[in-house]
Image (cartoon, rainbow, N blue to C red; front, side):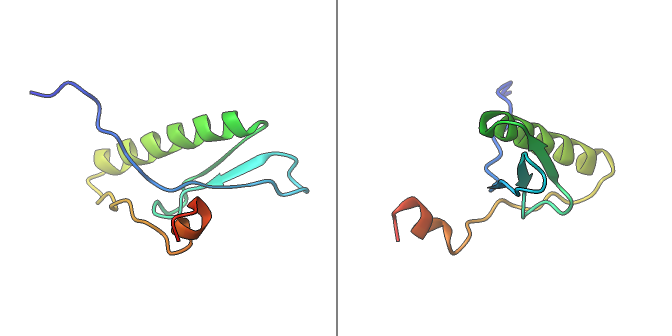
Length: 81
C-alpha cells in the first residue's frame, strides 16, 4: 500500500486585478475552484488548498474528478513553444 499522498497537477491561472488588490487564482479544470491571496506565494498555497478541498468534496459526494490537462498557451508561456 502506498501511503504517499496523491499529487495533483492542475493548472492555476493567477492574476492581479487592480480592483481586487489581491492575487486571484482560478483552476480552469475544476468548475468554481477559485481563491485569492495577498501575496503571490500565499495565492499559490491557497490555490493548492482549494484544489485539495475541491477534490475531497467531489469524492465525498461521489462526483467525478476531472483529469488535469495542458492548455495550448502553456508551452509558449514556459518557453517550450
